[in-house]
Length: 146
Length: 456
Image 1 (cartoon, each protein chain N blue to C red):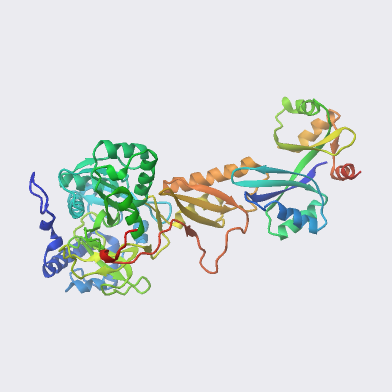
Image 2 (cartoon, rainbow over the protein chains, first blue to last red):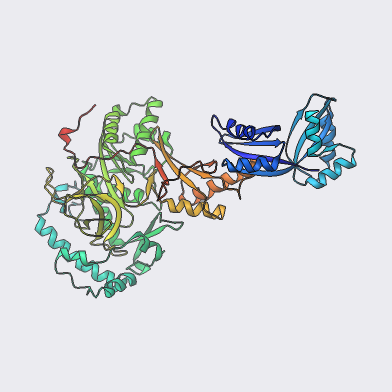
């Protein structure tokens, strides 16, 4: 149920983004979604790609430090209150959201949220119990490309 | 103290700096014999080394025999930390100071009351050589504390009869206020800090050239002729270089005279040699090598042939000022990887020890030294390793803070830690290039003839 996210360490200077994207492109690996977190000194590029294992291998070959993290993708209604309703599920729990990012894929009035939980399994259990659609990697790819 | 008339004016010509050479050599030989005897009788390490060489402690026939004595190194101070090289019982030690060692622990130095009197007397001679006397107001901006600079300059200037303002280091705006309001005529600090004061004074609208300040005594870090010209023109003062190190006494080992042709060594207390750092062979005067110093009168912690790691050359020819003691060229570089930042001695091995303590393994790193508006800054770039890499910003920022804390705690200096991508720091063939110094400390011309120095 969990999705593999690749994280790359980038120095905070011009030209750092294009190189890993080109490495992935040359290997025919697509990027479903990404987020760039930046500090004054460095950046973290987090990617969900079409083939995380091959993606990691070729990025490492290219000299990148790659961290693989299991994240949870959740489908949510793309309307006001969609996210708030979902976050209510965790308010009274001890499950912590380390970070999250969102994207829409232009259909069904749905958005996909990517969560990094400190306790992913407990989080999935709680989401399922509330009837939330937790999306796996295959489904995610199918939805994006449909 | 020689040359000091009670309540009177110290006249530098009464100091041992002017005695005929033959008389000085005789004094040095007598004192060298006594200090070797003292170290042999009281310091285990030294006795063991002489015995291994079958060299009798009274075996010095001439001054040249000093070449047969073993060297003392910074590692000896580290290995005997803290009190192992003391030659006086603790009851006779009235002061200790400390400076940075090559790893986490500092090195400790000790003084008897007599040692402090000697230190004060050489500082009196140093200040007098710079033209200071009673009536001068000295702003002492060297740090007071374990560092020898603050207290060494303080007691010397007081004994000379100058008015001492013990302002210590830091708080730049207050320094400028004191400089202006107290009608200061002389200042001592590191040369880089003084260039920072010049910059800041200009920002505050204080014209340094219009102040009564006329003399600056700068030391505790390497500087250059071009820095001297900049300081002298911008501040309207005469700038003097002072040399010293804690292991020998602190500041006051050598001082420039107004001729600025190198630094006169107070040879009646500190015997200088210059050696080839590779072979240990003694070089003739005029040839460049590593400065080796022997304390001739120190009681609490005699240093026999201490390897300073500072590269210089000795000049024996007479100086127009009339002093007979030999001069050493300005220190431009060292024979080890130590560097000096804001007056603090730093060894890359200290930084390594701190990084290792945090990371558990030694990451690839590089130290970058820069100078901005006269202030030195140190950045340590550390490559992120797979073990420590995280997808969480907080974890990486936490790592950066832990590294900064560890390095700052070890050195007592502010440091900027930058996390770098793997393999982004250039690998050199052979010995890693750990320190990149961009402070423009260009190589010096030694013993320049002042008449050839062009003023821009």
